Length: 395
Length: 124
Image 1 (cartoon, each protein chain N blue to C red):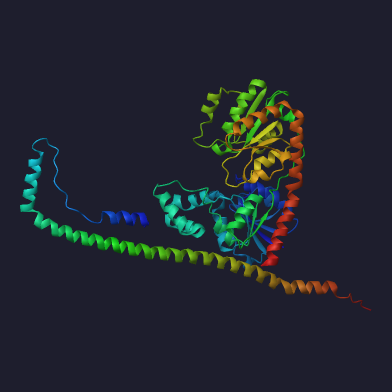
Image 2: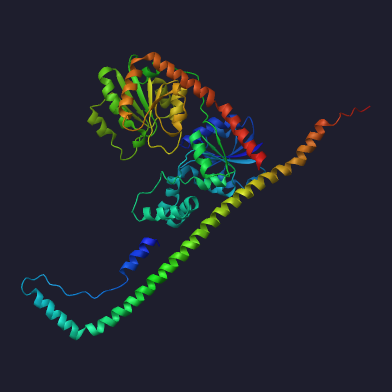
């Protein structure tokens, strides 16, 4: 099978580039893969040497180049997906939809460039005259843009011959809106690295004492990540565990008042604001934390790569009981209800996990088992090939 | 243009004569009476036909806009259908392209299969 593979690749700073770097070596064992990407000459030499990597502008279509299938990776970041989107509409194939909500993609592509009519057209295509009416009202300032109500994945979903998503929740949503398209759930590929350092060594490298307890949030900090809820719970937990620390590994959204929240809670040095971390630092923190916090609400139906990275590191993680996160096995994480009980549940579980090492190990072990059984890259690649083959058999 | 905007224009299309008013105490009614009398003598006979003409024009424009709006809505719906049809066609063309690629490969595959299954000839 000959596959034309369209995706951002490292060093491009997007999770989808990492995703492809994890998947490609395994996919390439099962098919002849040519990778098409922006700035092909800048792709990491380790990838460029192993695969045929070409620029997006050189692609002349599957028929002309005799590819059995085009495989596109589509996300909502315009910087990385604008050209892929254009090719996808011209030569549809199988699309991995990394974000269920593409409203911000169209917002950047059309609205910010003053192309109101084109935005209306997208809303009309997906939601008919009701969509146009909403867009007009929102444009006139009569109501906010219905980003959650109108996810705008329909054009990409309907034109594609097959769509791959990362949760059963997303599969149901896409299938209901794109009835002609074959939709398959395939988990994200997550490599489980052999432990190069122990948790203790990781803590020591980061300047913590061996008996310190470390809670960690990973990824970009925004209101939907509920870091404020976690920090309030942590501030209370510290009364019982003065040796507890909290690491926030990831950048903070512009305008998000994290420092004033820390002042309000009386938290100082015990909270480490790591910011964007390179691979090595990121993985050292992953190894060092005792408890991970990966709450998210509201969601756009997405799954979380950092959550799977924490689970792959064998850590117990607090997640929100919502959308795709509901599908995780109960034993492999701690699910927190969204709503009025959220704060008290986070507090209760944080205290319980900091107190009980055995519980942490037990949940962490189940998390690792889940990732190993569900997200093993070789198996994920096999599921990709199986789905592409199914699409080819049915066309 | 939205239905709401058309309704708003319709509500404002007729210009009406406004009565004079004055907030001045005691002399207010006198001012109003004087201005009304003067208006009746000097300008009313001239302005009223103009108002009538303007109102007729406004009514025609609003009716025209309303009709245009209905036609635009119809065109919008057709464009939506066309856009959806175009996407469906693109989807179908893609399916056919992949089928063509496969069919094109088939003779090669069949030949390869035949070669695999042919009995090996032993030269003597």
